[in-house]
Length: 231
View (tube, rainbow, N blue to C red):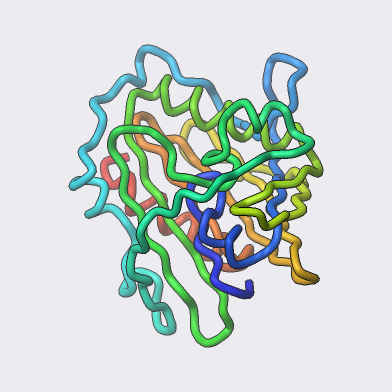
């Protein structure tokens, strides 16, 4: 992955400003006919565990010792608020520009960490959110459904047009209660960047791992194991 790609829950705000477009991909089944990136069972009353605090989520993030040699944690950057317009995807436009560009989700309890790997320019990002199981399920499901419902669209960030394409990927089975996965491709200025993003809800906790596809696949299970030590 090239250029500075900082992925966040369902998007890549910093990446959109430095790299190309975004594309989505996920597979899964859902009782209705709407496109979906979800697999697994929806939340029910029995899963309403108390949400974790942001401080507690911080302790469950992967660190450099978990990832191995070659990884460096990136300092958190100030949130940028550029004007964002979504073209060609009404469902995503309705959710707002911040969602289209990957702004952090609005759940009350959250923690995140971004890492670079070696000198290749590859990056991997982890985000943890906690809320009621139903709120997590509905919130993340709605965003993935909107993104996967638009195979191609365009996002204009601060006057810079970014072409987005989306491709559905099989969500990983056997992890948590619900799973989503997508492949995002950013294209602008003659350059393209591919980012994989996988989300897993386990009870009242939501894990999102984004970045270079190989790094996401390598660290997903490790991230979920550390994020859900009691399970």
